[in-house]
Structure formats: structure tokens, C-alpha cells
Image (cartoon, rainbow, N blue to C red; front, side):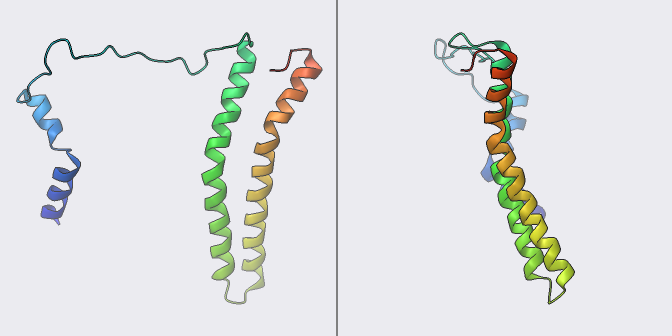
Length: 127
């Protein structure tokens, strides 16, 4: 088991971290290093307000997270149905799991529309 873990660490290059800390690695030639720049994820472009930037960023993040969660929950519901072995209570539980996953994903899909409607009701210009 230990030999397998050592081989895995060597292949992944995790043992190179110890080399970097001990100072045995050579630095890159001068003039080849580029400065690191960080981009503000909430930076507003196109004259939009900060509130619109934040809501758009949150909705985009929810959408990116919800896709794998829905897929996993549908698989969990299908697994519950497959392993029910004729138990109607477990089949119902699997169906409700799938239904709740689909309804939750529909809510996430409609979130941007709801945000635009609220912005129009509050008088903020829509993007």
C-alpha cells in the first residue's frame, strides 16, 4: 500500500513540493517571469450598476453549480427506484427526489427572469 502511494505521489509530482522548499530547484532565467494579475470577478462593464453585477454573478454561479447537482440528484432518485425491490414507499421517495431536483433546476433557470422583473419594478434599468 505504501509503495502504491509513493508511486502515485511521484506520478502526480507531489514530491516536487519538498524539493521546492529545500531549495534544490533552479530559478527560471531572469526576464522570463510575468507579473501576476488578478481580475475582479464583480467588475462592472458596460455601465451596469454594482447591484446588477452582483446579481448576475450570483445567478451565473448558481447555474454553474446547479447543473451537476441536478444530475447527481436524478441519479440518486433513479437509484432509489431501482433498489426499491417492490416497496412502493421507496419508489415514491425516488420519484419525489427526481421531481424536487427538476423543480429546483426550473427555479434556477427562472432566476434571471425574476431578477430582471424585480429590477424593472424597482425602476432600475435592465441590462
